[in-house]
Image (cartoon, rainbow, N blue to C red; front, side, top):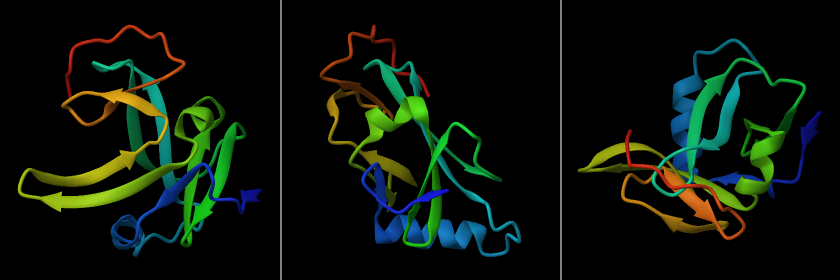
Amino acid sequence: MIDQQPTVVSLTDAAVVKLQELTKEETNTQIGLRVYVYSGGCSGFRYGMMLEDAPTPEDRVLEASGIKVYVDGQSVELLKGAQIDYVDTLMGAGFTVNNPNAVAACGCGSSFRTADDGGAPKGCSH
C-alpha cells in the first residue's frame, strides 16, 4: 500500500531527476529508493540509501514525485520530515539527507544524532 502523505521523507527536484535517470531503463515497476538509518558513525547514527527491487512487509511505502521510497519501520521516526537531495560539487556528487531531527552531525556528512538519542558516537569512517 502506498502512503500518499510525504511527511516522512521528501525529495528535491535534483534528487527526483537523478533517480529518474538511474531507473529510466528499469522494467520493474516496484523499484524504489530504500532509505534507512543504522547505528554507527561519529554522531551515533548513519544514513543508508540504495535502489531496491520491492518493498518488504515491514516497510512504509511512500511516493514522492513519482518515485517510490521505502523506509523500514525502525527508521521512520528518525527520518520524519527529512528531505533527500542530490548534490554535485567539486568535492563529489551524491545523495544527501537534510534531517530536521538531527541535533548533531560530523564532517563525514552521513552521521547524525537526535535529541532523544543516547547512542555512543564512533569514529568518522566511510
